[in-house]
Figure 1: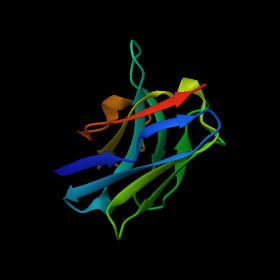
Figure 2 (figure 1 turned 90 degrees about the horizontal axis):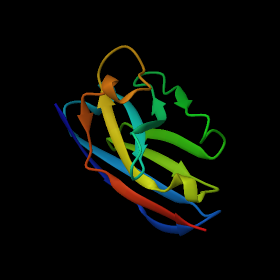
Figure 3 (figure 1 turned 30 degrees about the vertical axis):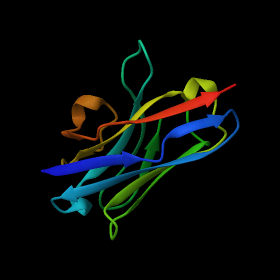
Length: 124
């Protein structure tokens, strides 16, 4: 299995930027599709972005498309989420997740491994 640890969250003003990192340890990182999800208070966990293990192709939720960028560095066993033009609605706990299936999932039940989460707060 794989262990995931997120970092890089914090407090930022609307319009600002943050970069989240998710470091993986355990089994070979390159075999996993990676995803980012977020959960705001009182809301369900929602998909943000995903990146495929081999091709590096990406997929985004409509709410973040054009503002967020997911990337991975297999040599560093790390996946990133660059978040620009942040809005108060982006405030949530952000989780990274890993899955070693052939399908790139956009729902939380498609992922087997999860990090502990990193708080992102965007002030207006």
